[in-house]
Image 1: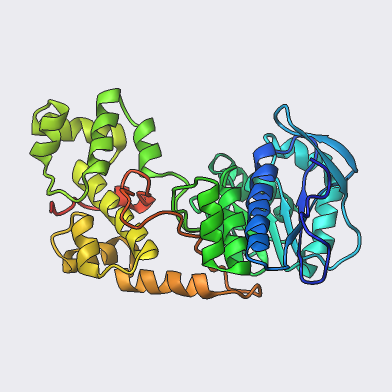
Image 2: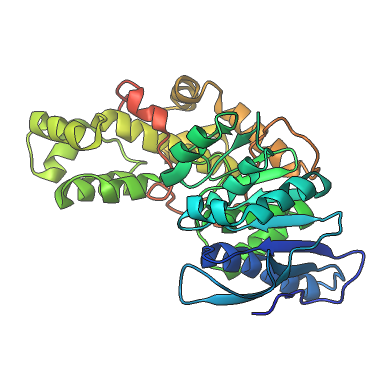
Length: 379
Protein backbone atom coordinates (compact mmCIF):
# COMPACT_ATOMS: atom_id res chain seq x y z
CA UNK A 1 0.00 0.00 0.00
CA UNK A 2 1.34 3.43 -0.87
CA UNK A 3 1.00 6.67 1.02
CA UNK A 4 -2.01 7.74 -1.03
CA UNK A 5 -5.08 5.58 -1.54
CA UNK A 6 -7.59 8.14 -2.65
CA UNK A 7 -9.41 6.09 -5.29
CA UNK A 8 -10.70 9.29 -6.81
CA UNK A 9 -9.66 12.45 -8.55
CA UNK A 10 -8.62 15.07 -5.99
CA UNK A 11 -11.13 17.85 -5.74
CA UNK A 12 -12.76 20.22 -3.35
CA UNK A 13 -15.76 17.93 -2.90
CA UNK A 14 -13.58 15.02 -1.76
CA UNK A 15 -13.24 14.25 1.94
CA UNK A 16 -9.56 14.14 2.80
CA UNK A 17 -8.50 11.61 5.42
CA UNK A 18 -5.02 11.30 6.91
CA UNK A 19 -4.26 8.01 8.69
CA UNK A 20 -1.24 8.49 10.95
CA UNK A 21 1.17 5.60 11.54
CA UNK A 22 4.64 5.22 13.06
CA UNK A 23 6.99 2.29 13.78
CA UNK A 24 5.16 -0.36 15.78
CA UNK A 25 1.65 0.86 14.96
CA UNK A 26 -1.20 -1.67 15.09
CA UNK A 27 -1.68 -2.72 11.48
CA UNK A 28 -5.39 -3.48 11.76
CA UNK A 29 -6.09 0.01 13.07
CA UNK A 30 -4.74 1.49 9.85
CA UNK A 31 -6.01 -1.15 7.43
CA UNK A 32 -9.48 -1.43 8.97
CA UNK A 33 -10.57 2.21 8.52
CA UNK A 34 -8.89 2.40 5.10
CA UNK A 35 -10.92 -0.61 3.97
CA UNK A 36 -14.15 0.91 5.25
CA UNK A 37 -13.56 4.15 3.39
CA UNK A 38 -12.37 2.35 0.25
CA UNK A 39 -15.59 0.34 0.11
CA UNK A 40 -17.52 3.56 0.65
CA UNK A 41 -15.76 5.00 -2.40
CA UNK A 42 -16.86 2.02 -4.51
CA UNK A 43 -20.47 2.56 -3.55
CA UNK A 44 -20.23 6.29 -4.23
CA UNK A 45 -18.85 5.56 -7.70
CA UNK A 46 -21.59 3.01 -8.39
CA UNK A 47 -24.20 5.58 -7.41
CA UNK A 48 -22.72 8.21 -9.68
CA UNK A 49 -21.73 10.40 -6.74
CA UNK A 50 -18.54 12.30 -7.66
CA UNK A 51 -17.40 12.64 -4.06
CA UNK A 52 -14.74 10.34 -2.64
CA UNK A 53 -12.68 9.77 0.46
CA UNK A 54 -9.18 10.85 -0.47
CA UNK A 55 -6.96 8.82 1.87
CA UNK A 56 -3.29 9.30 2.68
CA UNK A 57 -1.07 7.36 5.05
CA UNK A 58 1.28 9.73 6.87
CA UNK A 59 4.04 9.34 9.46
CA UNK A 60 6.54 11.55 11.32
CA UNK A 61 9.15 10.40 8.79
CA UNK A 62 8.21 9.38 5.26
CA UNK A 63 9.05 5.87 4.14
CA UNK A 64 8.13 2.25 4.71
CA UNK A 65 6.78 1.98 8.26
CA UNK A 66 6.85 -1.39 10.07
CA UNK A 67 3.77 -2.35 12.07
CA UNK A 68 3.27 -4.69 15.01
CA UNK A 69 2.86 -7.57 12.54
CA UNK A 70 4.61 -8.71 9.35
CA UNK A 71 2.89 -5.87 7.48
CA UNK A 72 4.69 -2.64 6.60
CA UNK A 73 3.04 0.35 4.96
CA UNK A 74 4.48 3.19 2.92
CA UNK A 75 3.63 6.62 4.27
CA UNK A 76 4.15 10.24 3.31
CA UNK A 77 5.42 12.77 5.83
CA UNK A 78 3.00 14.44 8.23
CA UNK A 79 1.45 17.48 6.51
CA UNK A 80 2.57 20.82 7.89
CA UNK A 81 -0.11 22.92 6.22
CA UNK A 82 -3.76 22.87 7.15
CA UNK A 83 -6.51 22.87 7.84
CA UNK A 84 -7.05 19.13 7.81
CA UNK A 85 -10.38 17.37 7.37
CA UNK A 86 -10.20 13.99 9.12
CA UNK A 87 -7.21 12.58 11.00
CA UNK A 88 -7.04 9.06 12.47
CA UNK A 89 -4.02 8.10 14.61
CA UNK A 90 -3.35 4.38 15.06
CA UNK A 91 -2.39 2.91 18.41
CA UNK A 92 0.65 0.82 19.36
CA UNK A 93 1.24 -2.40 21.26
CA UNK A 94 3.58 -0.60 23.69
CA UNK A 95 2.12 2.88 23.79
CA UNK A 96 4.49 4.17 26.49
CA UNK A 97 7.50 3.41 24.31
CA UNK A 98 5.77 4.96 21.30
CA UNK A 99 4.89 8.12 23.24
CA UNK A 100 8.46 8.57 24.46
CA UNK A 101 9.83 8.08 20.95
CA UNK A 102 7.27 10.00 18.88
CA UNK A 103 7.45 13.40 20.58
CA UNK A 104 7.23 15.11 17.20
CA UNK A 105 3.87 13.45 16.63
CA UNK A 106 2.58 14.76 19.97
CA UNK A 107 3.65 18.28 18.97
CA UNK A 108 1.99 17.85 15.58
CA UNK A 109 -1.26 16.81 17.25
CA UNK A 110 -1.15 19.91 19.43
CA UNK A 111 -0.73 22.16 16.38
CA UNK A 112 -3.17 20.48 14.02
CA UNK A 113 -6.07 19.12 16.06
CA UNK A 114 -8.32 22.12 16.44
CA UNK A 115 -8.03 23.02 12.77
CA UNK A 116 -9.29 19.59 11.80
CA UNK A 117 -12.95 18.75 11.32
CA UNK A 118 -12.44 15.34 12.98
CA UNK A 119 -9.37 14.30 14.93
CA UNK A 120 -9.40 10.70 16.15
CA UNK A 121 -7.21 8.55 18.36
CA UNK A 122 -7.70 4.84 17.60
CA UNK A 123 -7.22 2.44 20.51
CA UNK A 124 -4.08 3.58 22.38
CA UNK A 125 -3.67 6.30 19.76
CA UNK A 126 -5.79 8.32 22.18
CA UNK A 127 -2.63 8.69 24.29
CA UNK A 128 -1.18 11.03 21.66
CA UNK A 129 -4.22 13.28 21.95
CA UNK A 130 -3.98 13.17 25.74
CA UNK A 131 -0.24 13.91 25.74
CA UNK A 132 -0.92 16.94 23.55
CA UNK A 133 -3.43 18.22 26.12
CA UNK A 134 -6.32 17.87 23.71
CA UNK A 135 -8.40 15.63 25.97
CA UNK A 136 -8.17 17.67 29.16
CA UNK A 137 -11.67 17.94 30.59
CA UNK A 138 -13.07 15.81 27.76
CA UNK A 139 -14.54 12.33 27.57
CA UNK A 140 -12.44 9.70 25.85
CA UNK A 141 -11.97 5.96 25.59
CA UNK A 142 -9.16 3.58 24.71
CA UNK A 143 -8.44 -0.14 24.78
CA UNK A 144 -9.63 -1.64 28.07
CA UNK A 145 -6.13 -2.94 28.90
CA UNK A 146 -4.63 0.57 29.03
CA UNK A 147 -7.63 2.55 30.26
CA UNK A 148 -6.28 2.71 33.81
CA UNK A 149 -2.90 3.82 32.47
CA UNK A 150 -4.53 6.59 30.43
CA UNK A 151 -6.39 7.81 33.51
CA UNK A 152 -3.33 7.72 35.76
CA UNK A 153 -1.02 9.45 33.30
CA UNK A 154 -3.58 12.03 32.26
CA UNK A 155 -5.92 12.59 35.24
CA UNK A 156 -7.71 15.51 33.57
CA UNK A 157 -9.15 13.16 30.93
CA UNK A 158 -12.62 11.77 31.67
CA UNK A 159 -11.87 8.18 30.68
CA UNK A 160 -14.83 6.00 29.73
CA UNK A 161 -13.19 2.59 29.83
CA UNK A 162 -16.27 0.77 28.59
CA UNK A 163 -17.33 2.60 25.42
CA UNK A 164 -16.60 1.40 21.89
CA UNK A 165 -15.98 4.97 20.74
CA UNK A 166 -16.66 8.48 22.00
CA UNK A 167 -17.06 11.84 20.27
CA UNK A 168 -16.40 15.03 22.20
CA UNK A 169 -16.66 17.93 19.80
CA UNK A 170 -14.27 17.40 16.91
CA UNK A 171 -12.25 14.88 18.93
CA UNK A 172 -12.98 11.17 18.62
CA UNK A 173 -11.46 8.20 20.45
CA UNK A 174 -12.09 4.50 19.99
CA UNK A 175 -11.48 1.30 21.92
CA UNK A 176 -9.23 -1.52 20.83
CA UNK A 177 -8.38 -2.64 17.33
CA UNK A 178 -11.66 -3.53 15.56
CA UNK A 179 -13.42 -0.57 17.19
CA UNK A 180 -11.55 1.52 14.61
CA UNK A 181 -13.83 -0.08 12.01
CA UNK A 182 -16.88 0.95 14.01
CA UNK A 183 -15.59 4.51 14.21
CA UNK A 184 -14.90 4.61 10.46
CA UNK A 185 -18.43 3.35 9.77
CA UNK A 186 -19.75 6.14 11.98
CA UNK A 187 -17.79 8.62 9.84
CA UNK A 188 -19.36 7.18 6.68
CA UNK A 189 -22.81 7.46 8.22
CA UNK A 190 -22.14 11.03 9.29
CA UNK A 191 -20.81 12.01 5.86
CA UNK A 192 -23.10 10.11 3.47
CA UNK A 193 -25.95 8.68 5.50
CA UNK A 194 -27.04 5.47 7.12
CA UNK A 195 -27.79 3.56 3.91
CA UNK A 196 -24.25 3.85 2.60
CA UNK A 197 -22.78 2.85 5.95
CA UNK A 198 -25.08 -0.18 5.99
CA UNK A 199 -23.94 -1.17 2.50
CA UNK A 200 -20.28 -0.95 3.51
CA UNK A 201 -20.88 -2.97 6.67
CA UNK A 202 -22.58 -5.70 4.64
CA UNK A 203 -19.65 -5.76 2.21
CA UNK A 204 -17.30 -6.32 5.12
CA UNK A 205 -19.59 -9.03 6.56
CA UNK A 206 -19.95 -7.24 9.87
CA UNK A 207 -23.03 -8.54 11.61
CA UNK A 208 -22.77 -6.85 14.97
CA UNK A 209 -24.56 -3.65 15.88
CA UNK A 210 -21.98 -1.55 17.71
CA UNK A 211 -23.23 1.75 19.11
CA UNK A 212 -20.51 4.06 20.36
CA UNK A 213 -21.71 3.68 23.92
CA UNK A 214 -21.79 -0.10 23.83
CA UNK A 215 -19.54 -1.95 26.23
CA UNK A 216 -16.20 -3.28 24.98
CA UNK A 217 -17.23 -6.64 26.45
CA UNK A 218 -20.20 -8.44 24.90
CA UNK A 219 -22.19 -11.03 26.79
CA UNK A 220 -20.86 -13.66 24.40
CA UNK A 221 -17.26 -12.62 25.06
CA UNK A 222 -17.90 -12.57 28.78
CA UNK A 223 -19.37 -16.06 28.61
CA UNK A 224 -16.30 -17.35 26.76
CA UNK A 225 -14.09 -16.06 29.57
CA UNK A 226 -16.27 -17.20 32.47
CA UNK A 227 -16.00 -20.53 34.19
CA UNK A 228 -15.63 -24.15 33.07
CA UNK A 229 -17.03 -25.37 29.72
CA UNK A 230 -20.33 -26.44 31.27
CA UNK A 231 -20.93 -22.97 32.68
CA UNK A 232 -20.02 -21.32 29.38
CA UNK A 233 -22.44 -23.65 27.62
CA UNK A 234 -25.33 -22.64 29.87
CA UNK A 235 -24.59 -18.96 29.23
CA UNK A 236 -24.64 -19.55 25.48
CA UNK A 237 -27.95 -21.41 25.83
CA UNK A 238 -29.46 -18.56 27.86
CA UNK A 239 -28.41 -15.98 25.27
CA UNK A 240 -29.96 -18.06 22.49
CA UNK A 241 -33.29 -18.46 24.30
CA UNK A 242 -33.98 -15.03 25.75
CA UNK A 243 -37.51 -14.95 24.34
CA UNK A 244 -38.52 -17.99 26.38
CA UNK A 245 -39.88 -18.07 29.92
CA UNK A 246 -36.77 -19.13 31.82
CA UNK A 247 -36.50 -19.93 35.52
CA UNK A 248 -33.74 -21.15 37.80
CA UNK A 249 -34.95 -24.80 37.69
CA UNK A 250 -34.82 -24.67 33.85
CA UNK A 251 -31.23 -23.42 33.93
CA UNK A 252 -30.19 -25.90 36.61
CA UNK A 253 -31.71 -28.81 34.70
CA UNK A 254 -29.88 -27.73 31.56
CA UNK A 255 -26.63 -27.68 33.53
CA UNK A 256 -27.41 -31.00 35.22
CA UNK A 257 -27.35 -29.53 38.73
CA UNK A 258 -29.70 -28.83 41.57
CA UNK A 259 -31.14 -25.32 41.63
CA UNK A 260 -29.20 -24.44 44.77
CA UNK A 261 -25.87 -25.73 43.50
CA UNK A 262 -26.35 -24.11 40.09
CA UNK A 263 -27.14 -20.71 41.60
CA UNK A 264 -24.12 -20.91 43.89
CA UNK A 265 -21.70 -21.99 41.15
CA UNK A 266 -23.03 -19.46 38.60
CA UNK A 267 -22.63 -16.58 41.06
CA UNK A 268 -19.17 -17.77 42.08
CA UNK A 269 -17.93 -18.00 38.49
CA UNK A 270 -19.55 -14.86 37.06
CA UNK A 271 -19.98 -12.64 40.10
CA UNK A 272 -23.67 -12.16 39.32
CA UNK A 273 -26.79 -14.21 39.98
CA UNK A 274 -28.36 -16.16 37.10
CA UNK A 275 -31.49 -14.00 37.30
CA UNK A 276 -29.51 -10.77 37.11
CA UNK A 277 -27.45 -12.10 34.20
CA UNK A 278 -30.62 -13.08 32.35
CA UNK A 279 -32.24 -9.70 32.96
CA UNK A 280 -29.13 -7.88 31.74
CA UNK A 281 -28.97 -9.98 28.58
CA UNK A 282 -32.64 -9.29 27.86
CA UNK A 283 -31.98 -5.58 28.23
CA UNK A 284 -29.11 -5.93 25.78
CA UNK A 285 -31.31 -7.46 23.14
CA UNK A 286 -33.92 -4.77 23.77
CA UNK A 287 -31.28 -2.10 23.16
CA UNK A 288 -30.39 -3.62 19.81
CA UNK A 289 -34.02 -3.87 18.70
CA UNK A 290 -34.72 -0.33 19.85
CA UNK A 291 -31.84 0.93 17.71
CA UNK A 292 -32.24 -1.37 14.72
CA UNK A 293 -35.98 -1.44 14.21
CA UNK A 294 -39.26 0.41 14.43
CA UNK A 295 -40.90 -2.50 16.23
CA UNK A 296 -43.51 -1.50 18.84
CA UNK A 297 -42.57 -1.81 22.49
CA UNK A 298 -44.86 -4.80 23.06
CA UNK A 299 -43.14 -6.76 20.28
CA UNK A 300 -39.69 -5.87 21.57
CA UNK A 301 -40.68 -6.88 25.09
CA UNK A 302 -41.96 -10.24 23.85
CA UNK A 303 -38.88 -10.98 21.74
CA UNK A 304 -36.64 -10.20 24.70
CA UNK A 305 -38.54 -12.39 27.15
CA UNK A 306 -40.26 -9.70 29.21
CA UNK A 307 -43.82 -10.38 30.29
CA UNK A 308 -45.03 -6.98 29.02
CA UNK A 309 -43.85 -3.65 27.69
CA UNK A 310 -44.45 -2.26 31.18
CA UNK A 311 -42.00 -4.74 32.68
CA UNK A 312 -39.49 -3.79 29.99
CA UNK A 313 -39.97 -0.12 30.85
CA UNK A 314 -39.50 -0.67 34.59
CA UNK A 315 -36.39 -2.82 34.22
CA UNK A 316 -34.87 -0.47 31.62
CA UNK A 317 -35.53 2.54 33.84
CA UNK A 318 -33.96 0.86 36.85
CA UNK A 319 -30.84 -0.22 34.99
CA UNK A 320 -30.21 2.75 32.72
CA UNK A 321 -32.16 5.63 34.31
CA UNK A 322 -34.15 6.22 31.14
CA UNK A 323 -37.11 4.59 29.42
CA UNK A 324 -36.86 2.48 26.26
CA UNK A 325 -38.61 5.26 24.31
CA UNK A 326 -36.11 7.83 25.55
CA UNK A 327 -33.24 5.50 24.64
CA UNK A 328 -34.60 5.06 21.11
CA UNK A 329 -35.21 8.80 20.72
CA UNK A 330 -31.76 9.73 21.96
CA UNK A 331 -30.14 7.35 19.47
CA UNK A 332 -32.27 8.72 16.63
CA UNK A 333 -31.02 12.21 17.42
CA UNK A 334 -27.44 10.93 17.39
CA UNK A 335 -27.90 9.36 13.95
CA UNK A 336 -29.37 12.54 12.49
CA UNK A 337 -26.54 14.71 13.80
CA UNK A 338 -24.34 15.58 10.85
CA UNK A 339 -22.53 18.45 12.56
CA UNK A 340 -18.93 18.23 13.65
CA UNK A 341 -18.84 21.03 16.17
CA UNK A 342 -18.76 20.70 19.96
CA UNK A 343 -21.41 18.32 21.22
CA UNK A 344 -20.75 18.20 24.97
CA UNK A 345 -19.27 14.73 24.93
CA UNK A 346 -22.17 13.04 23.17
CA UNK A 347 -21.68 9.40 22.27
CA UNK A 348 -22.57 8.94 18.62
CA UNK A 349 -24.35 5.78 17.56
CA UNK A 350 -22.75 3.70 14.82
CA UNK A 351 -24.63 1.98 12.07
CA UNK A 352 -27.04 -0.91 12.12
CA UNK A 353 -25.64 -3.69 10.02
CA UNK A 354 -28.04 -6.59 10.18
CA UNK A 355 -31.70 -7.48 10.20
CA UNK A 356 -33.48 -6.50 13.40
CA UNK A 357 -35.03 -9.95 13.66
CA UNK A 358 -31.66 -11.69 13.80
CA UNK A 359 -30.81 -13.48 17.04
CA UNK A 360 -28.77 -10.73 18.62
CA UNK A 361 -28.88 -12.05 22.15
CA UNK A 362 -25.58 -13.83 21.88
CA UNK A 363 -23.84 -10.75 20.51
CA UNK A 364 -25.07 -7.84 22.58
CA UNK A 365 -23.79 -6.28 25.77
CA UNK A 366 -24.38 -6.83 29.47
CA UNK A 367 -23.73 -3.40 31.01
CA UNK A 368 -21.29 -3.39 33.95
CA UNK A 369 -23.98 -2.08 36.27
CA UNK A 370 -25.96 -5.29 35.66
CA UNK A 371 -23.73 -7.05 38.17
CA UNK A 372 -24.98 -4.72 40.87
CA UNK A 373 -28.67 -5.15 40.23
CA UNK A 374 -31.14 -7.44 41.94
CA UNK A 375 -32.64 -10.58 40.45
CA UNK A 376 -34.70 -10.47 37.30
CA UNK A 377 -38.38 -11.22 37.16
CA UNK A 378 -38.58 -14.41 35.15
CA UNK A 379 -40.70 -14.04 32.04
